Length: 257
Image (cartoon, rainbow, N blue to C red; front, top):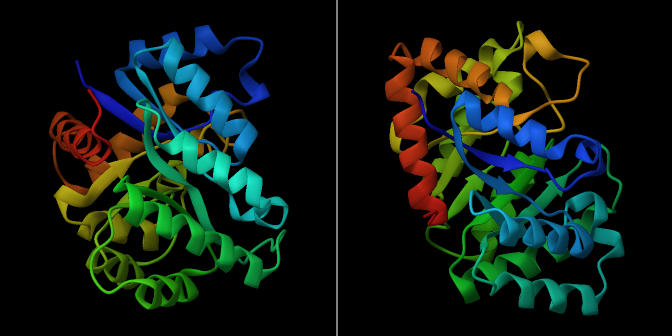
């Protein structure tokens, strides 16, 4: 049986309030061994931690999504910094830049993102980075903040292979989600094909971005198998080998055990 790690999921969201346990069980039956449950602000980071404390297969992250950057108070940032020290907290995120919707002003997004970069330096915990329509600025901010490699993942990567290699050079893993399966996403599949195997991760970003055959529906961790199948096909390797490699990468990056 294959084993997978869903490296980015939001099971604490209300989308799963009616059937959370059932959906988790289906994912486990499909081969998902571990779940990295991602916070997007103080409240959801706390909920993520609560879930991770209840279920040994879950691990939590804490951060402020760029959409929420404008609402991040100093007290909230200090509380999140304290949360990050919790044993079941394996990463900082999701944090980053989103210039597609710009729900927070760009300068505030950058300011809050830099606060989390400092937390990364202070704690050594990896970053879970959200980046949409902001890859050039993201690379600029990272290089300005610190010379040398970072540790973390570009979650739900959505650009081309040239952009991908810029972030690989900065030390990041690259995570592919449901959009890898979309019919017109050949550019993304080319990035997946050329990604070094030691830097490759998989995720669902559930409840968002379901694979092609489930578009328009709520995404679930069990659907990670479809993304894994496309990644294996794209890279021309057996599915079992692809799953083994990405699981090993996730366990190493996040310190899952």
